[in-house]
Amino acid sequence: MASINLIEAFQEFKDAENIDRPTMMKVVEDVFKTLLRKKYGSDENFDVIVNAEKGDLEIIRRRMIVEDGEVMDPLAEIAYSDAIKLEPDFEVGEELYQEVDILDFGRRAILAAKQTLASRIGDLKKNVLVKKYGDRIGEIITAEVYQVWKKEVLLLDEEGNELILPKSEQIPQDYFKKGENIRSVVKKVDMKNNSPVIILSRTSPDFLSKLLEIEVPEIFDGLITIRKIVREPGERAKVAVESFDDRIDPVGACVGMKGSRIHGIVRELKNENIDVINFTNNIQLLIQRSLTPAKISYMEVDNEQKHVDAYLKADQVSLAIGRRGVNIKLACELTGYDIDVYRENEEHEEEFDIDLEEFSDEIEAWIIDEFKRVGCDTARSVLNLTADELERRTDLERETIEDVRKILKEEFDRG
Image (cartoon, rainbow, N blue to C red; front, top):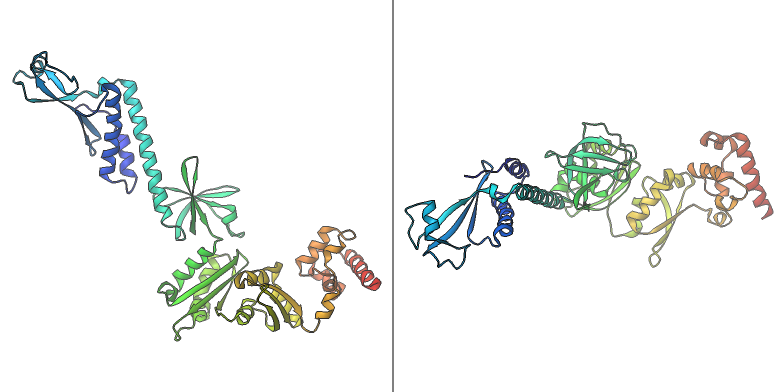
């Protein structure tokens, strides 16, 4: 058997999971039939026999023995006089099987065959990877951190496949060290320079959904349905759940005894506050629940414009808005309604309030941003707090606070 050192190439095949033996044989056969076509013009009278275990192959040429001078097709026939030179017992009408020495193709052709084979193997491995992770989009996987870069983290799965966790898909408080195992959800499979890139995510609502599925058997069994999840990664999440089994309390089942089920998820999400609420088709009730932990006194709902004016007691407004406006933003996303919150019985006063941005010609932008950071985005919201309170809450100096209050007061005095 004429042997060529293709063991390394075959080994590549064996290492690539899910590349089955018939596929392997077919690819190797195709590569060498291409060689035969280039050398002889046809591969019809050749058999390529592959030994995958040893990494060997042999090529057998089949020709019919004919009388001397009657050779019409040199590829399919051989003259009797030439045949008996190979084996004296041959007779006219018999088929001659002759092994082709692969070295006859020439060194350059053999190298080209190895490169083509390696390329075909690479393509097959890519297809296997795309299919494997294409089928797992939305599923949680565990992978090992291999390299941490500024804009992304490179992870390896159990088979050594490279996975990417971009910075935009990381929770802001995430901190990874090489060698640690982290959980994330498969977001998508991209193609970059003809190579598959597996993108993971820890900020996707799907990640929280799958974590709940793992921790809460009732969700996994389909007794509780997650209707919608909205997240501000690392800050807060709202999960609307419902159950068609009256014996099950969906919120209680998700939270667990003394928060036992939800605590593990909160830790995984770097202390992200998770509000689990009962889903309902009653929009007013859904809005009330979505603004948890704040309590609404009453509301005016415009279903056509999908707009809600919610009125709350003074001490509930900041709870409804939440830190950096996160709570109300998530409530809007969860319900699909634009929600404006007002202090109860002060709606007329609200009409005469002025947004702090209106004072940008007199107050520097970074000062306005500092007031907004503590929930003061209008002139009255600043004036309603004492200078002492503002000094305690913000990082501004007393003199700056007094100057701002003076500018705001003058505006209302002019009014």
